[in-house]
Image 1 (cartoon, helix red, strand yellow):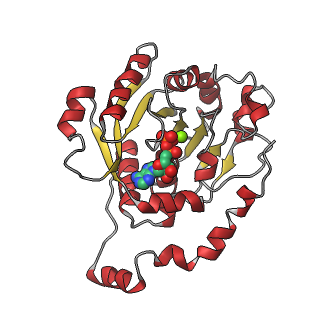
Image 2 (cartoon, helix red, strand yellow; image 1 turned 120 degrees about the horizontal axis):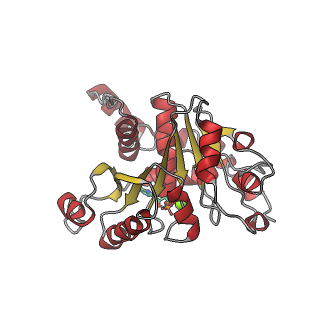
Image 3 (spheres, rainbow, N blue to C red; image 1 turned 180 degrees about the vertical axis):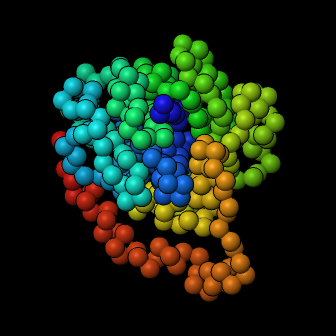
Length: 283
Ligand SMILES: Nc1ncnc2c1ncn2[C@@H]1O[C@H](COP(=O)(O)OP(=O)(O)O)[C@@H](O)[C@H]1O
Ligand SMILES: [Mg+2]
């Protein structure tokens, strides 16, 4: 049976969407898993943007929820093989939308479809939208930063989980700077009773990749955040992960070329790829 994982946090801006995009790309691209990611943040759908798949999609999750199409029709293929179900950017497509019956729709579409995992990107808070996303899932992966508000908000989410069958599996700790003022692992565990499955460093490459609309795992595979996302994908899928070798020659060559040489080389073409977003008028 296909496993449905919701990536959740009551706090906004902690990195849920970045995590879904990179986890999906790592699972599909590195570990060759059959994965579908679904943008369940209907109010502020950004998953397509993070994956560089912004366009005037005729069929989105909104069409499915409106009974105009089935989930299969709303699926778009990313270059890595990851399958993506975006939500509509159009404000008018939000009217009357509800994520009711999401779980049964996912089950009936993807059971027997050779799909290993369906990952849901959730809206923040404990709103109806967030609750229905969590209710559709078997497992919950929390994303937090090592700061008190984000950790307090996890317990708020756990409260919401009591009314569902979903099982919290752990925390992806994001934007870690290894500063003394950050919450320590044992403090986080004491408060949440959840394990930390991965620590993703604060990494400028994530911000760069966001504006280039290429997940950092693809754009800068050697960046600290990329390695951490691949490690998280290994934990989630139960795969072994051998970090890419950082031999002395590779390190010297990297230094010689400059820190950001990889993306700087293709800067012009990457910058051009932003135009489809900027040129697209929202209705
Ligand atoms: N590890 C990181 N290092 C640097 N910036 C990050 C990191 N993770 C996320 N960000 C940035 O934080 C912002 C919010 O991330 P996002 O995934 O949209 O949060 P959420 O979905 O939880 O609201 C984005 O601009 C993203 O580029
Ligand atoms: Mg988000």
